[in-house]
Amino acid sequence: MDHISMAGLAAAAGLGAADVNYIAFSGGGEVLTNVMGGHVAAGITGAGEASGQLGEGSQLRALGVSSPERLSGVLADVPTYQEQGIEYTFDIWRGVLGAPDMPAEAVAYYEDLFARMQETEAWAQARDQLGWLDAYQASEEFGAFLDEQKEQFSTILGDLGLLSQ
Image (tube, rainbow, N blue to C red; front, side):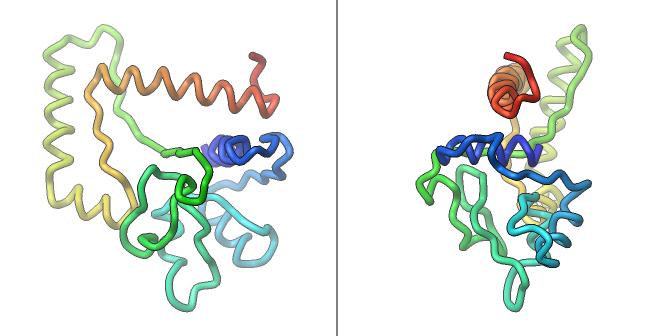
C-alpha cells in the first residue's frame, strides 16, 4: 500500500511514478529505522507508526499527510498534500467482507454492529491513538468504494509497469 501511495503522490505532483526510487521495507518500523539512520532520505508509513517518533526533540519531521484533512495529536500541525498544492489523497483502509450470498439480515446485523462500534469510547480512544479517521461505510457504499479503489490502483500499478492495462 505504501508503494501505491507514493507512486500516486508522485504522479499527482507531475513526476513519473516509475522514476521514484522506492525501496520496499517489511513495515513501518523498518521504514522509520532507515530514515532515522540516514539510509534513505524520506519514508512513507502510517500515522500510528510514526506518531511515537515525532514531536519535540525528534529525529524525524513529518512532511505531509495523505488524508483529506489534517490529523489530530502530534500530527495536527502537519499539512495535507492538498494544502501543499498536490491534489491527491490516499487512505489505508480496513474493511469487513462477507460471502457474496450472505443473507440480507446478516448484512444488516453487521452493518448495525460496526456502526454502533464506531460510536463507543474504546473506538474513539483507538482512533485517536492510531491517527485513524472515521470513515464507516455500509455495504453498498463500501462496494462502490472498492470499485473506485480498484480503478485507482490499476492505473497506478500500470504506471509502475506492475500491471498490464
